[in-house]
Length: 86
Image (cartoon, rainbow, N blue to C red; front, top):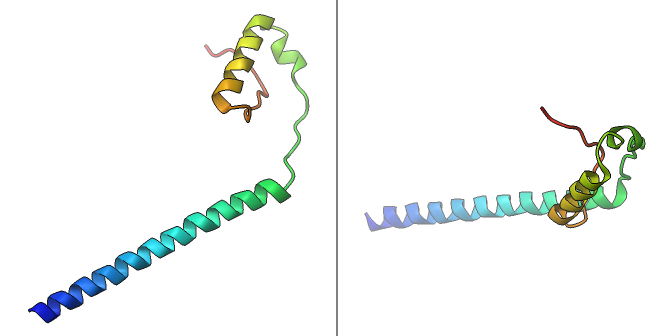
């Protein structure tokens, strides 16, 4: 019984290590892919549509929304459109 138990634990250990290594590879490849895409693929430029949507909103509200987005996204967020929801 001890030999069978030893073999079972050995197989379980090998399986757990294999799964850990495969998941680690998936995470590392994902991070490398994200860095590659962010560095070498140019960002898509959108048309400037800031004049029409913000003209109906008070400038103080636009400033408050902009500063909230800046704080929440730590400077990485960009407002493209502001619409009122019902």
